[in-house]
Picture 1 (cartoon, one colour):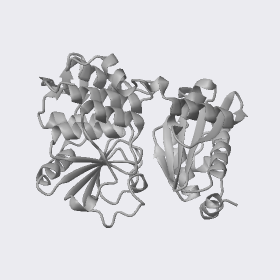
Picture 2 (tube, rainbow, N blue to C red; picture 1 turned 180 degrees about the vertical axis):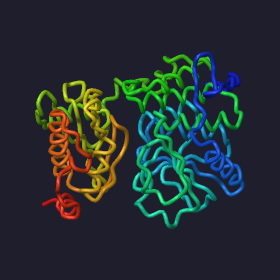
Picture 3 (cartoon, rainbow, N blue to C red; picture 1 turned 90 degrees about the horizontal axis):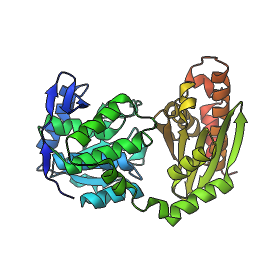
Length: 376
């Protein structure tokens, strides 16, 4: 893949432009410049761009764009990198270390992560100085400097803003990474906003990249991946569901490819899905919802955040795609997700407007956490 510069965008009042494509200016340019300055100042001491566990396409794409902007940075991820993320790294001929020694770096830039549990055991006291660069709404958990913009459909859009701020020419690698991250975090454009589509137009118009080039990189032989196919079929076999009016809330369990399994159940007919990846050392739950569920007022990121509080874990994410990380009894937590989501859909379908915390009911958080962490 060639890295030949495609050109420099045209500044406009509302953002940088290539053709009709617009990448908006940062919401807080001064704050973002502070991060840029620290990444430049940290060059001699070392800078690590660090992604969350099972780093997805958006996290990897964000790291890659920052690598194009600041070539001296190193890339890392907590615990693992997703299969699509590894495909993008291979296409870019870049490496991302899993669980690197962070203590040797002067600065760590955490990307696409809404909580410390996504990048650590939750205790960052031994870490070097660190910043957070993200686009999720919930950030009160971070006890460090952070820049987050929930108006961006993908974190990579913020990384692209940084690249443009430094007057870097757009090149093919940046365009492919940017489009890949946006595709992934908007559910292949299902949840895309006008600004996300405009950013993709910006990248396509400013480079010689075609959409099929990006899909070839991030999908490739995806549909022939036997492990993914088996995970999806196992999810179908283990599915449990509840009918709420005309809506279906479904749960299932797999050992891997939980996001792919969730998408498969949505295609099969479910309206909201919760899939647990239950492993000896951790529990991950991925949730997905169809657009008409979101129009009821359901926000999966907020919902999973509350489930996390009830179970002693941490959850969060987007309105239509969110997750939970931690430990506990998978069946009990899935049952809780189904019960509480059924209640939320029923109340919202009746037109009763309630605060999100009320939709999760009066269950005591401490007792719930103890019960749901128990295997008994």
